[in-house]
Image (cartoon, rainbow, N blue to C red; front, side, top):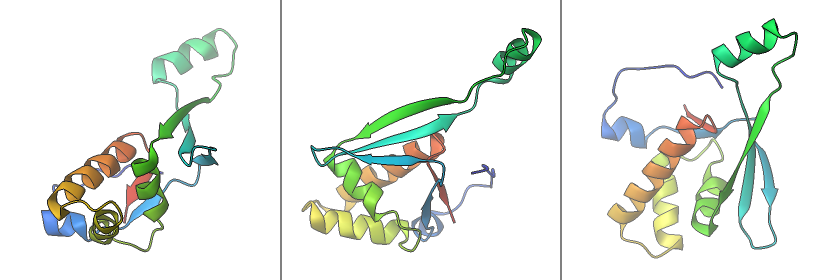
Length: 122
């Protein structure tokens, strides 16, 4: 997914966004009920340049991120149809959390997934 830098949006606009999973992310369900995400990471430009000069192809590095049960439950809610606000509501009810506590946790989690390129917002 290509990152588009936009100007800061309001809290209400952010909560109305729909998180969409990156199609390049591979999901692996573990026996523990948790999820392992495997995703490609692009090499830094200088590493690619050195590889080309040495006649080597820059291989695609794949990283792994293991989600705990709460992270897995949020990941499963990211279906491209629910807004961030709806994800927070379901997460709050499922885990019996105060709505503000759920909001902080879910937003931070989605932000971290976004930094890693695992989700985008529509």
